[in-house]
Amino acid sequence: MSRRRLSLLAGLLLGLAASGAGQTAAGGDRQMPANKFASQNDWWKHAVLYEIYPRSYADSNNDGTGDLPGITQHLDHLAQLGVDAIWITPCFPSPQVDFGYDVSDYRNIDPQYGTLADFDHLVAEAKKRDIKVILDFVVNHTSDKHRWFMESEKSKDNPYRDYYIWRDGKRSGQPPNNWTSTFGGPSWTFSDKTNQWYYHFFYPQQPDLNWRNPKVEQEMFDVTRFWYRHGVYGFRLDAVDTLFEDPNLTDNPPAEGTDAYGMAKQQHTYDHRPAEVHAELQKLRKVADEFPGRVLIGETWTETPQQLAEYYGPLNNELQMPMYFNFTKVTKLDAVQFRQKVAAIESNPVHGWPVYVLSNHDIRRYVDRYGNTGNKDQVAKLMSALYLTLRGSAIMYYGEEIGMENNDPKRVEDVKDVIGKKGWPKEIGRDGERTPMQWNRSVNAGFNKGAKPWLPVDANYKTHNVAAETADPQSVLNWYRGLIRLRRDNPAFYEGDYVSLNDTDANVMSFLRKSQHGTALVLLNFAAQPQAVSLDAGKVGAERARVLMTTGSQLGTVNITHLALNPYGVFIAELQP
Ligand code: GLC
View 1 (tube, rainbow, N blue to C red):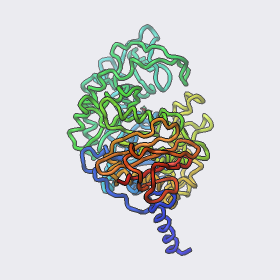
View 2 (tube, rainbow, N blue to C red; view 1 turned 45 degrees about the vertical axis):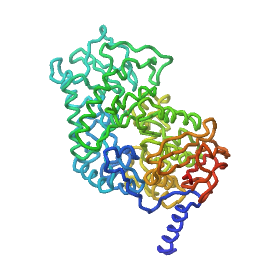
View 3 (tube, rainbow, N blue to C red; view 1 turned 90 degrees about the vertical axis):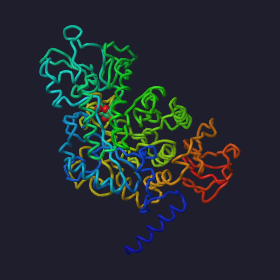
View 4 (cartoon, rainbow, N blue to C red; view 1 turned 180 degrees about the vertical axis):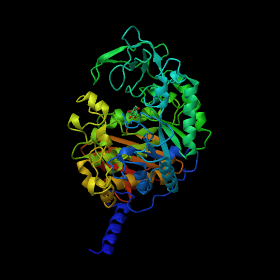
């Protein structure tokens, strides 16, 4: 077939997709409309953020590890997808014990990812495409190879001693208290240089900073200013729940069972979230407010709506975007549980702006949590339709837009993540969700030019890659593009309230996004069987709606009082007055 005829065919297929045959989705080469909120200070409220694990995104120099120029080369993909900002997990100099979450210099770029000039270039190129860059700020701890810690370790009277938490043992050979590290073993390590113990909630190579020391505070505030001046639009703050601990070092109460590393479990009562964390984050927010439009995002693994509410600050003066992780805690496709999780944040005491997350570099990809071999693409369309149509910001994880799966190690010898090595087989580590991004069908899925990638490319790359899915109107990628376009285009999605419908339905989640400028209806079938949905036209406020996106075959304007949904089906429509 000639090239011209091929492109005519592609155009026809895309036209069909956009006009509603089968999956109704904007995609392909159609331009994404600009986000009209992009230049406002609260741009993040209407944003889709996209997390990039830089080791795994694109390897421009073919050394097996992804890098910043690799990200720059793929900005067009991100622009076409419609993301407003990218959050890059730590790319600072680091011994890489925890793949960058052990920072040895907060003001530079690790040579394996590039240079500061590469970073500036990335920011400039992203800006041309209206994409903002967010960095990951590891606030709780540094690397043990950070200059501050190496000084601190030398002597009790070293000027950097109080940058960290050093204590005497309870008695000879015993740590100061019973606290355990989330990465296994006691959270204290003894140093025979001074016969004291230092505290680390994570690995021993990640000593906790002492934020009660005003010098630490100032150093860290200045780090954020440094990056704001490099054009960074904000920070995802790592591990904020453990920024402070009880100053009296009270023992944690015991809990049932043992952890993956063989330690007795405990309730983390005294090493998490004392009130000081909020006062400190409010100060960090003041620094952010020196620069317009900057945003603070929190890795906030909270247990209750009240705890999450506190992170917004009493006057919305703390984190603009504390992440809502409760979706990630749902273990199966269950309309009732997801409806409850939405209700919980919608009724959150401070009514803070929700920040939805389904997957990240620490948790199994959601298609693996909820799907099986036969239905992962359907699950991808269902779950993306859920979190991208809710009131709130969404944080995507790279690869979810093409339905990437976990590619878990099968043997402990292959594991790279230290917690997987230590905890195997109970804890297999996080390699599975961190494998190379799949760009096309070529060698290593286009991640690089053939050098062995640091983690293996998933076998499904031949079908699940950006190039193949761009050409397929029914793909997960074109579905995501369609949803993100809807969020930008349609007032119901960017300004509407959330109104739950049919609250007792066990299989279908139904809701409105209701604004003064239009109302949209969203129906999501969480079941493997087709479902019939009846809606009360009086409650909904209309009998007819114009189909916007569907995994079914409805076209044009339809009666919505009785609708059929296919297995895992999605139906999104705009009410007609
Ligand atoms: C956060 C990061 C995780 C890291 C840990 C220690 O939870 O998301 O990847 O291992 O902090 O920094």
